[in-house]
Length: 175
Picture 1 (cartoon, helix red, strand yellow):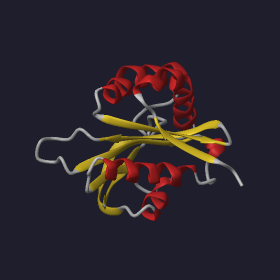
Picture 2 (cartoon, helix red, strand yellow):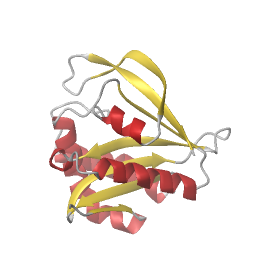
Picture 3 (tube, rainbow, N blue to C red):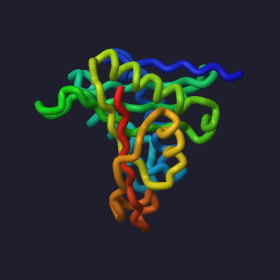
Picture 4 (cartoon, rainbow, N blue to C red):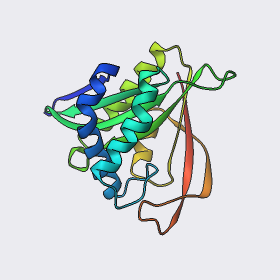
């Protein structure tokens, strides 16, 4: 059985994992994952995203970044946005859930979602929200993790190929 290790990355560990995170992002976007980017997507694009947008938020304590390894190989990541408007201190939001194509269907996604729950509970959050491409392979994972559909918005975003629009399903989970 494969060994899955999930860690919340501390600020001092971010730079050491930047290349691996960027490579996972490039693989997932180029494989068709709808996580906000268009193809072609390079590792350099992923590095720019993590270093410019994610790492500063993690260092400021506004976001948690969890990373998974499968048998010692970087396999996925997920972010939990914890800085919310003043009237929503009880809520957090899942962002950029990614599992490398070679690591899928081996429990990595489940382990990452369990880490999201643990981080949210540790921070005293009572509600987690997320959005996902309607009909995406990730929807059953989120449902299995206890998320409930709140609604669907048609024509919400472009698919990664930049050609077609897809609907987005909003989901939530109470802790």
